[in-house]
Amino acid sequence: MKRVVFNQKGGVGKSTIAVNLAAAAAKAGRKVLVVDLDPQGNASHYLLGHPHQDANNGVAGFFADQLTISLYQKSPLAFVVPTPFERLFLMPSHPELDELMGKLEARYKMFKLKEALDALAADFDEIWIDTPPSLNFYTRSALIAADRCLIPFDCDSFSRHALYKLIDNTGEIRADHNPRLAIEGIVVNQFQPRASLPAQLVAELRDEGLPVLPVKLSSSVKIRESHQLARPMVYLDARHKLAEEYAALYQHLSPSV
Image (cartoon, rainbow, N blue to C red):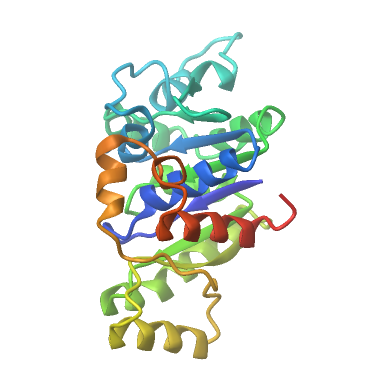
């Protein structure tokens, strides 16, 4: 299964959600790969504890390899690195992705990630893709490559207005390039149950027939500690409410695991 976490709005928790659900999958015994397509590299930093330095060893190296003329291109596995966590692997990001994007677009390399991840599916039980906060070459490549799409929603009225355009964009990719792609659900993030506005917004989304997932992710300062220590919640404190919510959300998405 290949899942992409996608939202064109920044600051809604894409990297945090992708990493923590991937970690929950690894903790449940799955062999998992995280693909970090955001040049900012937050997911890579989160899993490695530091920014990834080697542009040749990761996503940037993979895409640079697609621009070369060679009979012997590297296997996609050559661009995967281990993390400190058992069964959890990473194809890390690098700022050089920004420089590569124009060349990749000009040579229409948008299907190369799909080919690579289809090949890597033989080596991993699950692949989770983190995306930039825009509908650019890398995000389109991810949507073309994925089976399922998760949309973070941070209980904000601006996020709500952006949802409809985002769903339309996803539908366009499905119609034009990837008929397998399905929106698996909207992930409610930074939820505050005692505040009236978040509950109202979530209820309105459900009333409109949008696929809001039943497990909500709480707002907690513990996630900042998780970022600082570079330890996903299920490894930092498995009994914390937020860690349990991530585990429960993963089980809802993959009930047979």
